[in-house]
Image (cartoon, one colour):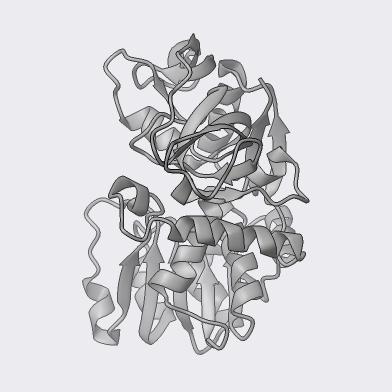
Length: 332
């Protein structure tokens, strides 16, 4: 099968940073699906792994978000059958989705929303799982939850899903999103944010729309922000961080008894958690929300085909910053 891989960390401007390769078609394990890939999306985690993990000259296939068609199933599969259209975000400890065929555990896979194209669906899984787990497993919210949620980088992939899921599933909560450009402000307002603040002057701009502070913060870029968060959060407030800031000091949060949570959507598949099927249930719920019109795809840029040149361009755009929504690549 055709695939795209890298052999050592290189600048994305180097043609060898991502290469076209030929690999054997993988065999599904007992709980696995073999999926023919129709579309993949590119996330910051792809860039981080490519730049920071050295495979020692062996071809390592990246890619997590995917949508495609099940072509074979393992002996113990119960949730899917051959021919099903699926979407999912995969796992860090298995080969990635930038290949014609991919194996994935059925317990972290969902049926593709039938009203979406494969490209539209491929934009959703990783960010939907991250946002959903942040809202309901880290913040432990429900439909009756009130208060104010601050979503940093609201026009990014996770922020875009956080805004939509918060509005759809916690309707009594006020959502403030940060955005600094006119187009990103329009994007987050279109997704349902009640107010917009500017992350370049975070404290002042949030105080302008929430003079009494906020109750919760989703933080995709935590380094250098803890003092700001301590200032903005009300006593007993909460933070969910999805990044990996080095040398993080959370002591400024203590005087307000602010809670700090990590969210890592790969935790369940990486550790074979007993409740791994919760991600299947989550993706099924998101698909129903999409079909009901409560959540829409965050696809903003579609490229093709799925090859090394196209993926290098997608990585370059992610590295440059300022992307709105998701970049998706379709077709081999």
